[in-house]
Length: 451
Image (cartoon, rainbow, N blue to C red; front, side, top):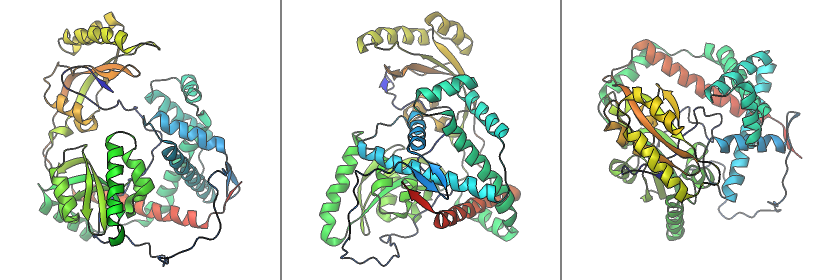
């Protein structure tokens, strides 16, 4: 994103609805200790591989318990992911994404199959209704949504397959898993007591890429970690993709996501780094027991303490796109006109009229929290008065936009959750954990054949 104006804004405008994700983080995991991760597989140190796998042989079709997943299915889901995650991928990262997408499609197939085996049905009408709601979230009619999906190289069928899997699995969990979960009063009271004791302490949401380094390879691994760090900082590689591809930690499957943790559970060097980092910053290589880590600070908060970034905003977004083929020089004059229009606005009541004069589009949003915005936008919004706007931001490819602040609902002071509220949260976590175990069992028992 090119930044227009003195604020130095960076970041990318996100889609309204995320229809696919690269990694799931329903249950956050923290670092249990600082030991080098162990596989427990009794793999010999000096191993010999017999046979050769040819990476140029591509098997586009998979049979999952006789259900076919084709190469077209994978391509269309990849297109859906890439359209909603504006990330430039290298050939290696793209191939890694393909493997992840195939794994996701296999999981969805297993979920649909298990639901049907338990006589749990999802009707075509329910799928169509969900598809229609997603189209509305994209501010499109159903026919327009179909055309949009075709335009990005995906299809209505691909999205509906995901919808069916989500509906079937959620229904399966409600009927077969939730009745088995029962959280006792003592468990609830214990968690509430721990929260009360932790009130005011700082928690960090961090991601980690951990590279194990035996003593004889320490310098080599350090150099590799430093090279990865430089690639990520220069935008050549994506932190999450590197974590999925290279990290030696148990959090690798979740793109290195450790979730919300306190400094006390992190190795000392990582805790020191997290305390000094700004949100959105990446640090490393950091020496830790057994190797080196790259650390990304996603967010931070104080337990049960009101945070100004939790304020809910009433915004009006003004945006304008450039015709295809517009040069940077031509865009500059349009940006100047847009900036002048933004500066002429006096309160949200002026937005529609001012935007219409320039042919700009206006979109209202009443649900965004400050912390949901890119970090640089957060700093700007925190300093705005009602009726003021951000400087213009955007790019020639994506167009330019500005946000006008119409209102702000300040966050309430942090309060301990009630017993029933905490019980519901704990039961939801327990259901998610059982669901993960069930899906692992389904994967273990599945017959998957590649052709």
